[in-house]
Image 1 (cartoon, rainbow, N blue to C red):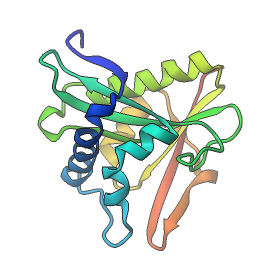
Image 2 (spheres, rainbow, N blue to C red; image 1 turned 135 degrees about the vertical axis):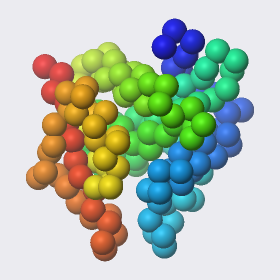
Image 3 (tube, helix red, strand yellow; image 1 turned 180 degrees about the horizontal axis):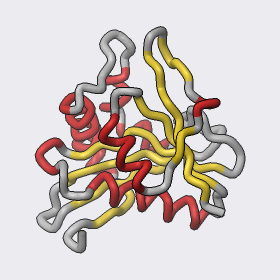
Image 4 (spheres, rainbow, N blue to C red; image 1 turned 135 degrees about the horizontal axis):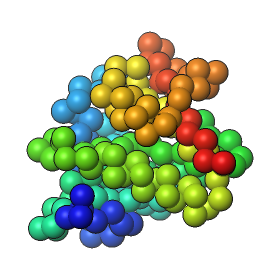
Length: 165
């Protein structure tokens, strides 16, 4: 995807990034009612402050995707441990799906993990996000069932890992 730029988010983009993330999760029907996740998805400013926030921008300057990268022990890390890099809130603009943007963002996370010397990349995902699971598995991620967890009753997140060493 030579017409796609993956780069750190800019302060002026944070509102649009939050809206894009919420739109992506809403389109995939992956929002769980009553747990406040929509508010968290909209708050890209907090993610940019406490984690690394990357965006995908197409040739005409449109924001088409985003991902949050969290180091272990930081506020956005949910399951990462020492030597791991975690990513969360991968979202693609609904009108831009099917163009490889999610894959490009995931590959950017993997590259960042290598830059930081991480041994593996980890993530967790709703059980119902099967399209995302296929992407992760195609890129070499494998299930990490011992780290599956429930952030809220009835909401199960399944874990994946990619070994880098």
